[in-house]
Image 1 (cartoon, rainbow, N blue to C red):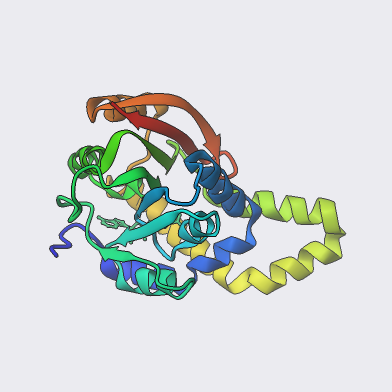
Image 2: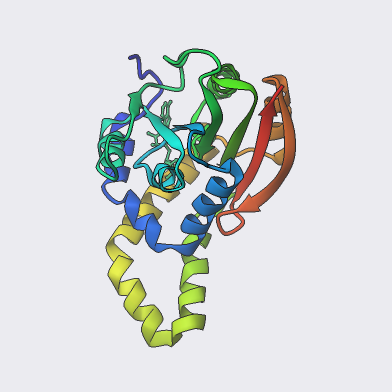
Amino acid sequence: MSTAGYDQGFWDRYFRYYDALEQFEPYREMLDLVARLCEPARGVRILDVGAGTGNLLSRLRAAGATAVALDANDRGLARAASKGPSVPCIRATLDSPLPIRPASFERVTAVNVLYTLSPAAAERCLREVRRVLRPGGRFVFVTPVEGAKPQMVYVESVRRWWREQGPIGAARRMARVIVPTVAILAYNERIRRQGDQGAFRFFREVELREELVRAGFEVGEIGRTYANQAWIGSAVSR
Ligand SMILES: C[S@@+](CC[C@H](N)C(=O)[O-])C[C@H]1O[C@@H](n2cnc3c(N)ncnc32)[C@H](O)[C@@H]1O
C-alpha cells in the first residue's frame, strides 16, 4: 500500500490520546448523529473510511449493522479491532483506488477525514465512495467548516459541565482529562496551522456540495455539528 501524502507519524502520535474525545459531549453527540443518519440495522453493510480508533464503528455495530473499518493507520485499526469481537478492518489509503468490489455497501461514512486529503485525492476518494456504494446507497459525512475552531469542542463541554455540576464538578471533570486535552489541542493547533499552509482543507458548504455533485451524488441538507465547527450531511449515490 502506498501511503504517499499520508503522515503516519502524526496520526500515530495523535491516536495515543484520541479516545479521550469520548469524554466530550460534542464529539459523542456528533458520532451519535452520524450513526442515526446511517439508520444502522441488522444486515446493513456500512464502510467507515478514515475510521481512526473505531468510535463510530462501535456505535454502528451496537445497532446491529455489519460495519467495516478502513484506515491507513495500523495503530488506529488495532484499537478499533480491540473494541469488539472480530471487527473487520481494511488497511488502505484514500489516496488510491479502494481494494473493495463495486456496490459492496449500503452506506459509507467519513467523519473528519475529507479535510486531510488534497483536492485531487478528495475528488478521487468521493468517486471511490460512490463506486463501492450500491446504487441509491447513502454517504454520510462530517468535515470541518472553513475557519473551524476545534477548541470550541472543549469550551462547549466545560460550559455544560459548569452549568450541570457547578464549578467544583466542572473542575473535577477537567482535571480528569487535562493531559489528553492539552495534547489534542496541540495536535488540532498543528492541523489548523498546516491548514493555513494548504496541507489540510476546510470546506465552504458550497464547495463541499459541488464536489459531491461532481462525484455523482444527490446531496441532501447540510447542517452543522461538533460544537458548530463541522458540516454534517448525507448524499445519495445516483
Ligand atoms: C481526525 S481522524 C478521524 C477518525 C474517526 N473518523 C473519528 O471521527 O473518530 C482522521 C482519520 O483519517 C485517517 N486518514 C487520514 N488521511 C488518510 C488517507 N489518506 N488514507 C486513509 N486514512 C486516512 C487517519 O488515519 C485518521 O484515522
